[in-house]
Image (cartoon, chains in turn cyan, yellow):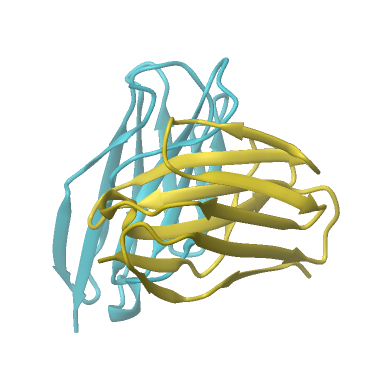
Length: 111
Length: 112
């Protein structure tokens, strides 16, 4: 399978805590992307990290990529109730023509 | 800026009826366009993608078809819906195939 697999499937934390989600994949990639989906809505792109990058930041988001372990993590710091959503990783495998989305991590931030 | 529209937002159709979902993009030209289906609590399954007018590629064999009659219009169709066609359908666009994708609000289809 060329898609990523997120872990955990569901995560519940208190507001103000940090949330970490992981994505593992099996093939070599050109880039890996993280998306957010609020319930019943479309996906929103968060961060793209290329295979030659190890870490990227965007506001309260931090993404790491370890190509040797074929894994990525998304860290949301100082979480807010509005961060409640599902988070998906999408891989761009080498030699493929499209992105492959995982099944997502459902994050609940309790106020 | 670019915007993507999908309609209708929700649809309830009987088995065997036809389907037409429409997606349009504004503010860009020659986008790559995609149709995805998302089953409840699941990831996205790529159904079709298009790199230009009249150019459609199908990722999975199925009861659905897609067309791109204009540069920024992408249509998902079926002649006869099946129960298994129920799901959340998402249209997306990107500048190039490996770039980040921008999604529409989705269409919730229930086949009864």
